[in-house]
Length: 270
Image (cartoon, rainbow, N blue to C red; front, side, top):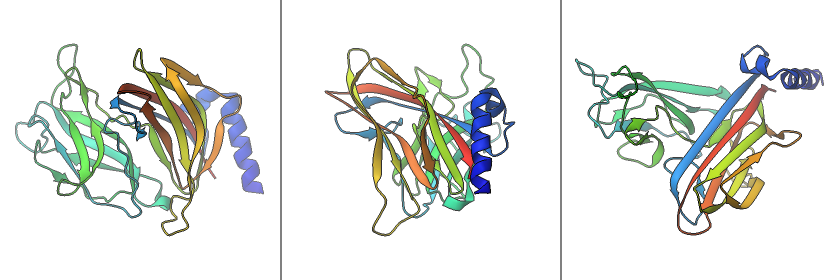
């Protein structure tokens, strides 16, 4: 009972002054901003990520990282002119919380990661061989995280019009054990003159890996969305109690469409 009272007090404090939360000054609480996009979503539901994939294996899997450019090389001397090192964020064990691993790139040669992951929900470029400015870019390549030996696609860091974005676009997240999340706001945008259907889903008890399994359940369903939509309920969606998966899937109502989603989570210690 005492733990619940303390959590309620933490939520009330966070709601009364969001800047305390943003500055990390509320013990046991934090903000997670997530965004994702895909430029060619067809007429079947896909995760809103650059690669239209989001792997959710029952057991952790070994991964590797590779670039499509020899410029992304932090292992040689002199260093490459592109991305040199990335940081991968995700879950390795549900009760271990967020885990990160830094990987030094070796151009088009795959680099095996030391950590096996259950979920990967964010990838960032953290070192570059170029001091970026208006005309010079940190990288202009495609960086891929995949299963070892050219396995299934997990995540990508892309470029747009020759400018590397520096991090992945993944509109999904994994809440670890001992955490609870609420979603106070979200927004989606659709390519001009197109329409799309969107689903926000949650799968509770993601650590249950034998039947009967928990169900991936829709919490928000938006049909025939045109241009953009903003979601800001009077009370946040939730609670989403870890371990759980949550995120957005979308489909074009005809042909293909560019779909993007941006959402915010407030994550508390239970």
